[in-house]
Length: 533
Image (cartoon, rainbow, N blue to C red; front, top):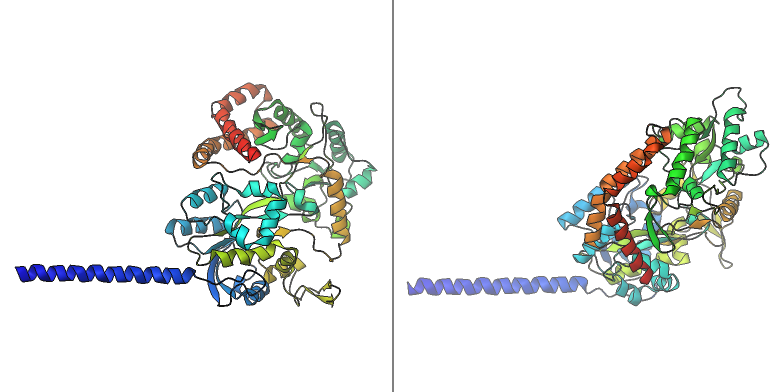
C-alpha cells in the first residue's frame, strides 16, 4: 500500500511539473508572438515579416489578395494578411458569429456603423475583445493623433462612455461630405419646357410648380403621364421636405441643447398635412409606398418625373454627366410655420471602420499600418491605387499625375477601381476628399457649386454621434422596435389618407404609451455627456 501511495504521489508531481512546463512554454510562445519589433517611422513597418488576419466586407468585384493596392502596401510594410471577406449583405451575420465563437480576426476593417454598431464597440470593448486605441494612437500614429487634436468633434464621436476609442472612423471632406442623403433633383428639361427661371423657395411655390408639372405636359408627349414628385417609401425625400417645417430628422434630434422626438411634434403634423395634400392631388406618386428603386429609375428614364431623389440625378434619368448638369439641386424651402430654411447635414464621420482585436499579436504594427491612410498621400494611394493602374506620372519631380485610360472590359472607371483597391463600396478608414493636383471635371464643379449654394448655408447636424451605455442601449432597443414600426406605418397611412389626421391625438397617445419620454431622456443624457466631453 505504501508503494502504491508513493507511486501516486510521484505521478502527481510529474503531472504538475509537466503542466507547469507546458504553461511556461505557452506563455513564452505568447510573449514571443507579441514581441514584434516595430519601426516608428517610414517603411517597412516591421523588419521581420508579420502575418495577420483581417475581416472585411467583400463587394464581389475582386479578391482582396489580388488587389494591387494591398499587394504593393504589403511590400512597403512587410505585413501580409489573410483576408476574410464575406459578402457585404452577409457581413454582419458573419461578424457576429466570429465574435461569438472567439475566432475573430486580428483586424476588423471597413465594416461601418451599420454592420459594426456603436453598441458592439461598447460591448466587446468592455469585454476586452477589442483593444483600446487611444494610447496606441498617441504613441504610434501621428496622422491620427493630429486628426484628433485638430478635430475635437471626431474625437468626441469615437470615444465611448468608458473613455476608450475602440474603432476608427472614415472622416469625409470635400463638397459631398455634408450630404445627409442623396439630394432631391429637378428635371431640367421640364423646367426649360415651362420657362421656369427660379426654383421654389416656399412650400406654396413648390406646390404650384408641382401642379404645373402635372397639368402642362412638360415632357411633351401629349399624355397625362407626368409624375411631379416621387420616392420609395419617402426614405430619401423625407429629410429634405421635413426641413421646410423646421425639422432636421425623422426621430431624435437636438435643438439648442434640447432633445425631441419629431414624429410627435406639431411641425410633423404640418408636414403630414402637406404631403397628404400632394398625394390627394396626385402630385406625389401613388406608388410611393409600394414601388422598388428599380421601378423608380424606370420612370426616370422614361422622362416621367419632375422632382426625385438620388445621389446624382443621372442615376435615375440615365443621362450623361453633361446632360445631368441641367438638373438643378433642390432649393431648401420655408413654410407658414418655419421661416428658416433648414436641411440635415451629415457629421461626415462614419464610425466602426477599423478595430484591433485581442487576438492581434502586434497592435503597435497594426495601428502604424492604418495610420498611413489618414495622410493625404495615404488616401490618394488607397483611393487611386499604385502607379501604373489608374494613374501615371506626367512630371514626377513637379508632382503632376495624369489618369490612365480604363482598360477594355470595364463599364466605368469605378468598376475598374473596384478591382484595384478595397476603397470601393464600403467605408474605409481614412480621411477622404478631393485629390490634390487632380483636375476637377465639369460635373465635379457643378456638384460643388450646387452644394455650396443649396446645402451648405442651410445644413445642420440633427443629432451628434453618441454612445449609449449597455443599459441605455438595451432599453432604447426595446422601445425602438415597436415605436419605429408604428411611426413608419402611420406616416404612410396619414399621407395616403388611409388614416385621417383628425385622429392625430389618438396617434400621439399611442406613442406616449410606448415609453417615449424615457426614450427621449436616454438620448438627452447621451447628448449631455457628448456636449460636456
